[in-house]
Length: 203
Figure 1 (cartoon, one colour):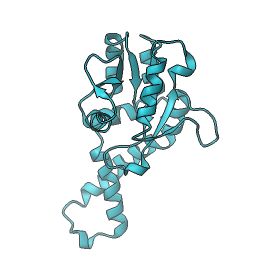
Figure 2 (tube, rainbow, N blue to C red; figure 1 turned 90 degrees about the vertical axis):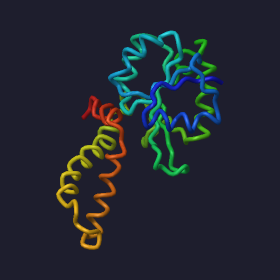
Figure 3 (cartoon, helix red, strand yellow; figure 1 turned 60 degrees about the vertical axis):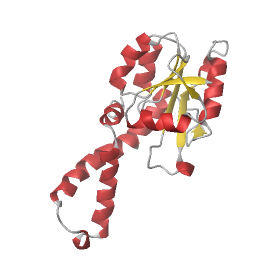
Figure 4 (cartoon, one colour; figure 1 turned 135 degrees about the vertical axis):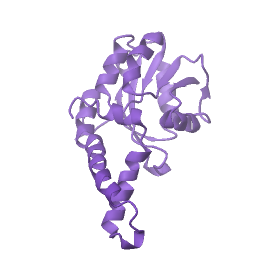
């Protein structure tokens, strides 16, 4: 199967590394992964509206809605992992499956092949902790309590970490070192990812 990955930032590059052994990465592919900030979704959906669009945005409802303005051929997933995530801790939430909505779409078979290949690099979750099938909306409600909260907490903690810059490690309590390590996760996060996380309508 051929796929195109749009986005050469941190996550797009990482996806390219992970998926190139499984799929053929090609510019003219019919399946297109949008690994870009949410602010780029509308224009890219207009440009690639004749393709099967795969949404990997950190906020799912607004990004999926933008894509659906241009095409019904949308698969929406949220990979809950990054470069630092151990292989056995990778998980991905699926919020919209084209093959369940329009099984006669010419892209439905392609979607099944894509999700099967993607499951080789990440566990795939379709239901929440209550056993309910995820939707873009239910995903965002959950992420507002978790993903958004983590970003907000890290931003606040960063102020305290920067105030202690220059203090030797042997003079820092372990609790502070743990806080500093947590703040580093924010530093590792691309600005486009933070933009997308903070676009959560339930924040």
